[in-house]
Image 1 (tube, rainbow over the protein chains, first blue to last red):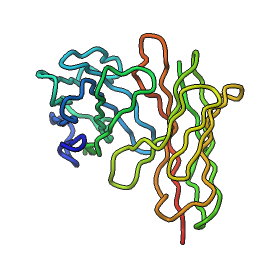
Image 2: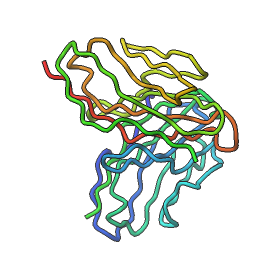
Image 3: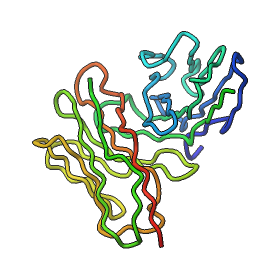
Image 4: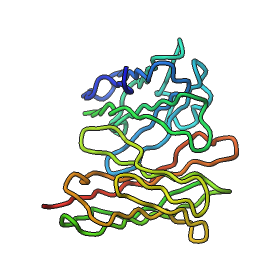
Length: 116
Length: 115
């Protein structure tokens, strides 16, 4: 596609439910990132994939968060037993190459998760 | 660790006014610096970037100069338009070290331009 596509755009979950957020990066993009943007804050790094390999998951807040990219294209961010503090916009971004220096990312519009 | 501090908003201006949004950073070495813009309901878009000291990034009438001596990357525009209303994020990425793929963002500055 022309851009990075994320779904669902909006998700309301009851506390304790599991959710799955999907990211379709630009076709052929090697690098894929997930960021979390809490209300009134800047995005914060969650995890980084290069093709299907998850090279860095140091930003995942807890073991309830899990991300995968099994075929090196579509990625899913899964949150188990959601808590109210998980409410945020989850941003996916991709880049055509392994990301260093000034290479730029293309961001999706985000998935807004609200946990009641 | 790396950090970005940008001026808190919201900022409200009249059309054709001059805009400055301050941004300072803390980082090891010489990071690349970015300004991203987020229009309502849309994803982050790169507005401009600079990769080394004294570089000036520019786009759509916006400018920012990489000032190593003051560790700053202030965003300026000479004459804002209503369509510039958005949230602006300053960000950096390290150019060396093991995590030179992560973007570190400021908290964002909401700009509203009134006609």
